[in-house]
Length: 469
Image 1: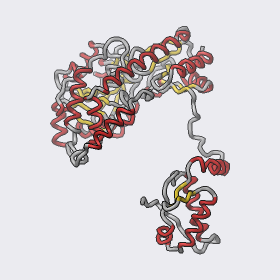
Image 2: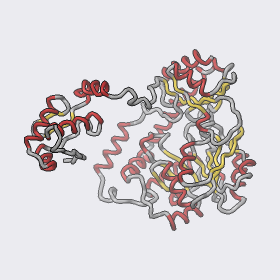
Image 3: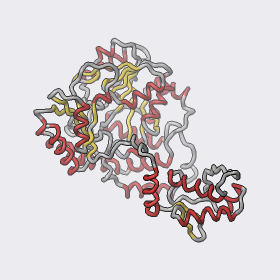
Image 4: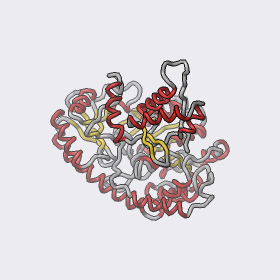
């Protein structure tokens, strides 16, 4: 039986009896959510021995909690915290007893949330994933539960290598790939490989989470302005940055796709000095609605200057938490000599499931289905936004899962977001992705459509039309 964290401080000198003190402690823990619904409590005998009190004292406390509905006594099984339905009335009493300020920091629920990060999970092949998982666990042996290789299982790295070459033009060998639990881990690992206090340049606006990770590594960061082709290399040259973090295929959040000319400028910049590298975050690369996905920047790298990072979180599910990093050979040697002692952060079971999901063709079929779903939503939101053309410029389309509206009437992002919230619609402001001092920019709002249904997109845009136009 799981032993619960019991920290009852019984005070014999109190004017309350011992059984009352036990009763009040457990009651308060349940109300606070520290004891979860259906969680089993220690037996009365165990509790009595632990607290050095009589069994009768504990029985009285438990009986009182059962009579008030906090606990449920199950024959021959013990005492359990009551289920949600049984605690509804108690929750109402608890809320009335709470101070008015409690919970005010929580954001109010918004009916139509145009989040650029959310994806549609309604079509996820749960049955297929469950079948693969069951099959793997049935055939599992001691090897699967061992630690495994620090870079990730060779079988999955080989599968990822083949997938990247076929879909993104990435040129690599399985030995160059490192598998990690999310991009956050890979960026932190990269800090160990590149060294401390490396000057990093980032596009502006940029992916804020990556910026926070770089700052946590004590990296100096320069923000480089962008034009219609992406990061401005002329401005990059004015810094002493050693590393540039870029998203050339579909920049987040602007949606800009970097043309080949600008890519060649970037690669030239990286080749002009020793120890210069480009970190290519291949954000949203799978979802492009006109033509084929653009080749990666790494595909054009002949000098070993590009670190390629990708993830399955967007294409499959956020909970998968499996990302990958392709290291050029100079950095791979450094990883092997200085960082290979770090254990893989992805379980071998999850790696095996994903490997079979890709190898057996389920991933490709699911990706094709989602491309079709997202293309329909993409076309729908662009059609619904046609009445906005006199008030907004629409950009960032044809790829990814969001579009951008640039205001033509001189209104502020705060004003537009506030008006939208009053209509029960949440939109996202570009200023939240801009770093450092920037020149005055027109108001730009980000509308993600990935997780919304067609009906929600129509209704949400209709509400924005009423309050914005």
